[in-house]
Structure formats: structure tokens, C-alpha cells
Amino acid sequence: MTRHPGVFVSLDGPSAVGKSTTVAELGRLLVGRGDSVFTTAEPSTSELGEFTRAKANHIHGRALACLVAANRYEHIEVELEPLLSAGQTVVCDRYLASSLVLQQLDGVPEPFVLALNRHILLPDLAVILTAEPETIAARLAARGKRHRFHDDPTGPAREVGLYRDAAQTLMTLGVEVLVLDSTDTTPTDVAKRIADALPSRGGSVDNPSKNDDPTVNS
View 1 (cartoon, rainbow, N blue to C red):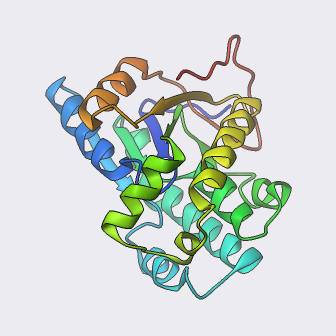
View 2 (view 1 turned 135 degrees about the vertical axis):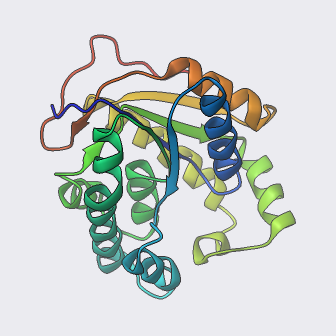
């Protein structure tokens, strides 16, 4: 397992569960506790990341999965690893779990996604935000569709189920996973629960380690 002095937290989940707001709240909370915190997202803000974001509705399947993975490796090399090596806490809005879910929704098998991401940096804590499918559907309707996956009326329920599966996959890789339901919980309260759960270790898909007691909390 690769180790670093910083702490890497990823935050994933279906659309409209409050990921971005929770990332911002968590950043403020950790800074208030005296931590050095950097918040980021995938696709990243690099030229490759912006291209990926702009073309995600037009590039499909394995091609998109490869593009997302390429941006992730760039993100790790240019941003994540230097920050973690400097001892910072890095919070990333969308990471491996999102690939496991969105690429499967796009017809890409999980083994292909895992193979593409074989050498990535694993999060020290992978947070999966979820909510009732009906709540997600109502939030999406209120804010409007933002990408092609929102065209499927069964999408929210499918995403919730696939993120549940992704949590199990991450645990088999030795990642500590925290699953939180945001249906009736504020982003501030969710952020507090994440902050209280922060561990301090790192790794890669290529060299997973087993947790003594990997658990998913709800």
C-alpha cells in the first residue's frame, strides 16, 4: 500500500444528493478545526478535464471510460499526489465510485472500469451519499436535467442500487467506506459525520489491503 502524510477523501453518489454542497461544508468544517484542506472535483479543471466534462454527453461507453480514467491519472499526478505528500487533506467531488456507476450505466462492465483504474490512488475514506430515489427524482425535476443520464426515468433508482454495489467493490479493495443518506439530513450534518470518520492512510487499486473490519455505515 502506498502511504502519504495527507488524507484523501472522495465523495460520490447519485445526481442531486448534495455532493458539491457537502464538499464545501466539509472543507469549511475541517479548516475551522485547523486542517490544511484542498477541495477538488472530477473531471478536473485541466484542459483534459474540461474536455471530458464538455464531451461527456457526446462520447459514450468504453471511449468515455478511457477519457475519464486518463483525466484521473493526470489529476493524481499533477494535483492529488503533490498535495497529499505535503500533508494536506484533499476532498474530491466524484472519484472511482462514480466511474463504477456511471460507466456501467453507459454499458461498460465493471471489470473494464477496474482495469482502467488499476493503478490509481485509492481514497483513505470513500464517502457515498445516497437518498431515496423519489427524493432524487424530485430534486432533478426542480433543477433541470444536466446530462444524458437524466433522460431515463428509472435512473435515480438504478444509480442508488449501483452505488450500493460500488461501496461493496471499494471495500473489497481495502477502502474504508462511509455511506450516508441525505434524504432528511442537511449537508452540514453530513459533513460533520464525515469529519468524525476521517482515517489517515492511503493505497492504490494495484496493491489493495484488507481492512480488519470494513463496514458501511448508514
